[in-house]
Picture 1 (cartoon, rainbow, N blue to C red):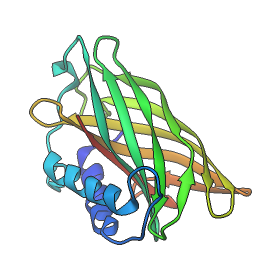
Picture 2 (picture 1 turned 135 degrees about the vertical axis):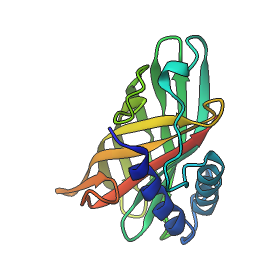
Picture 3 (picture 1 turned 90 degrees about the vertical axis):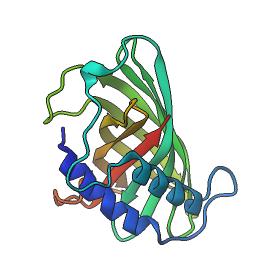
Length: 202
């Protein structure tokens, strides 16, 4: 559950941080490619408008068919972790599915694994205080240099944007655990250890 101002403030900061970083994995997009994609989608979607871009109302979405979205999911503290995001919206049954993989960080390190998007739901009401869609985003990533396992237990909340719902963006909240340490994931303003947002386009 979030308002557009919170999302815009977080994305503006991510765009600044995404410009810094190292390499990526041999397979899939590199960190630099993901970073450039993130900035490009964020700019073209209009969500960098800190005055609050208008989202596409859930009640105006199609009731048949669906759409595939591709983009980037980000996780930041003093360094950047980016992943290649794929998301499918089924408007006929109001569900969201997909996942993210090809994770790499601004230190040039890579992570093996895919985090699935599950239990995704699209909501047709237009309450501005609530997201248009919500999903679980849970799984494990392996930090390739050491084999350390990161347990991801998070929740995605987002909205559609653009004249024809061609963009999707939102925040990720929850926890990341590794070697007994538990770190919180949230927005830039809620005191979490990391802040995480995603952007995608069809």
